[in-house]
Length: 107
Image 1 (cartoon, one colour):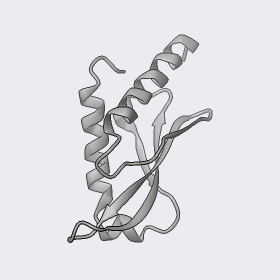
Image 2 (tube, one colour; image 1 turned 60 degrees about the vertical axis):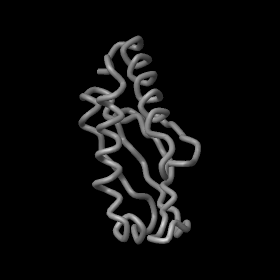
Image 3 (cartoon, one colour; image 1 turned 180 degrees about the vertical axis):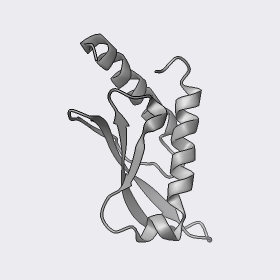
């Protein structure tokens, strides 16, 4: 991948992360890059059925450098109690895909 293409992809990923921020994804994004992935770390602030905050689930989105953005991987960091309790995988994956769709023109 050319350096300009990588810069464009990073910019697109930053836009996606900013777009999906809020509604539980309430913390600052932390970005890292390795040979295969652009990694975006954040946490989801879970709420119980009464509207009270119940816990925090850390997660990482790994966007492949050489593949399409839709080929991302969602990883839950640490214990997965809240991820399982609140069925976060489906919700976060749909939210990420919506973010990709909403940020038109990203590759």
